[in-house]
Amino acid sequence: MSFESKNAVTVVIATLGGASLASTIAALNQGTVSPAEILICIPSTDASKITTAISDIANVKIIKTDFRGQVAQRHWGFQHAAHDIVMQLDDDIWVDAQCIERLLRTLHTLGPQIAVAPALINQATGLSVYKKPARNKLISTIYYWLMNGAAGYSPGRIDKSGSAVGVDPALSSNDIHDVEWLAGGCMMHYKKNLILENFWPLPGKAYYEDAVHSFLLKNKGIRLVIDSRAQCSLELLGQTDLKLKHLFSVLYRDYLARQYSMKRFSQPSLRVYPYYFFRVISYIYTRSKLFLKNNLWK
Image (cartoon, rainbow, N blue to C red):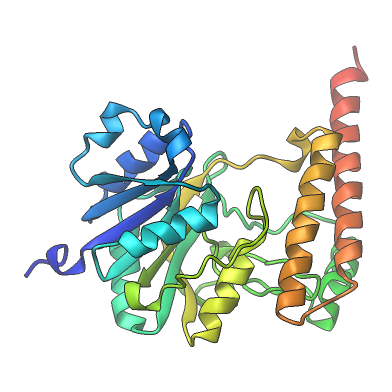
């Protein structure tokens, strides 16, 4: 039996039918291992956005829902998955050619109680999405102490402010990283290990659901790992691209989600407040620099 045939994968994509969906599916089907099925989970009210070119792809199935919400749509897809291995994927993430194959090999090598995710790469720079920001050393030390106490900067961990700190593979010689959380944008599981409850009660964009999902997986005894040999790319929207009013809206929803999560898991902390203070100060500082750069010599 070939590697591909014994490793049939269902990919679940929760979407509202955005413009990037077609290229996300194309990247999946151009890899060394293609998914056996791709479930596009979309609210009925948005289903008209799915083009014939997408719906006619042989391994694509459209799953319409009577509700919207990324977590709810994804879990509906989980329940319809036909295969024992399931990969969740956001509709704006592009897997590289060997991503699925490498995740499969790691899943089998380290399983059965495992969930594995790839390294996430900024498409514009080719660097990790979680590249550590370049800051003055003293400011960086103070910031990470405020966020996480004596442990400071801790890649792959959820710090004491509730922030999920990502792993930059460039900072380690290891390919496999044991972590406390995995980004929900791309993750592979055994179907029997899936969290099938709709655990996200808040309306709108599911800020912080990655941390909650990871916590629930760990409570089931699932080991969370990143295999940095597998990679996905995505476009990043910088904080400074937001208008101030929109920024405060984003931060408020992030705050509600973080408070819900930390309360649910009995991990309250006053460190969330300096986190938001630094977010606003960083935004103002960066926007001011851009304004001066664009206007000073006019």
